[in-house]
Length: 188
Image (cartoon, rainbow, N blue to C red; front, side, top):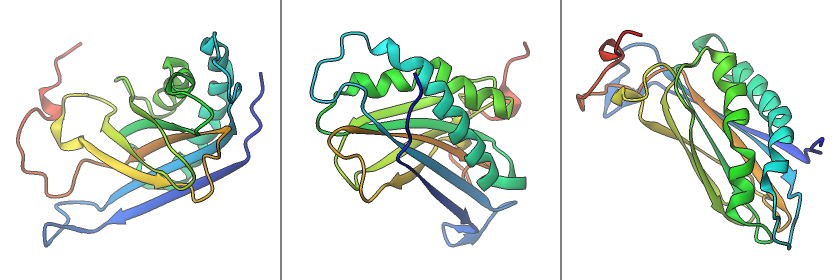
């Protein structure tokens, strides 16, 4: 099953200051890349949503390629994924596109060892989605808990799904909330 992507939308931000202070190191680059695809079964209950998984890999690979291009030399330290389904679909259709196979395209490309956090929701054109970010190397490293937001002004239409990958180059700027760090990751 090949997916016909209607459009890609990208968001890139570079944060230099936080909390009234300059960055405690390199700037923070956050990227989100979205693909607008047709819902495979709009307006009808899709009995077997697992049929969407193979198509998700193809889209995931392209979203990953675009995200890596946008983050550039800053590299990827954290990641996440998400989807919005239009009004003629249901949340399970989103989830079926965000399975392990989709996440593996991103995880493998950046050498991650942790699962890719995700979020799904229903929404209409212009609905924003906050992609949860967590460390690619140690899920419990608190400094990397963050989000990147994206919206597509004309999507999802009723019969569409918006798939999103988000990445960030580092943890939050001037992080001081404590908790586990990358150094606390147990040896394997």
